[in-house]
Image (cartoon, rainbow, N blue to C red; front, side):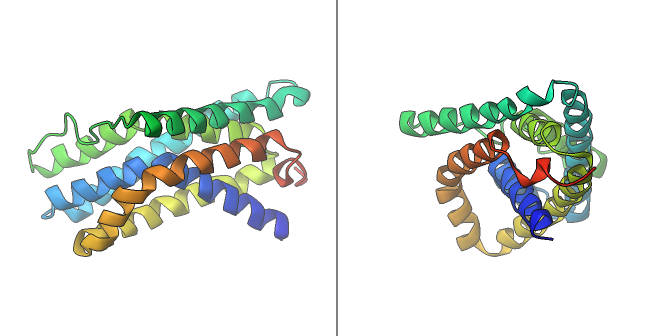
Length: 201
């Protein structure tokens, strides 16, 4: 049981670290398309499920790497975390809503959410691919439901924060400082001899 809780904690942390920018984008989308909250939720969920499938396929392919080298995949999120820290010190920011249409047609909103999530989630795909590749098959059955559960959590938090501006301000103000350190910790977890390697397949 303790191993499962560790896996859930690591997978949740990885999701948070790689999707805080998507959370802020989702808040903006709920605010912009306030007449279509269900469509926004559906588009976000569809986009993230596609990302989960891509990460799962890439992670399973990564298991073809010799066992002795799998842990080295942890270097990837560590590099991503260090790069994020460097960007913070450089004070660079990216426009999260660039290219987002203001057309409020439900179908347009749905596909806008999918495309923006896909275009903004390379870090999620890379991090979860490494985590899945480094994990046993039994652990994958915990990582994937955790990923799906975090989709629901982020949808609720984003929708809730639209009505509570202090929460959205807090996320925008401090989220960027948390992300690099979580990514580095996830990378160190993958590099180590972790519980995900010990759960029997």
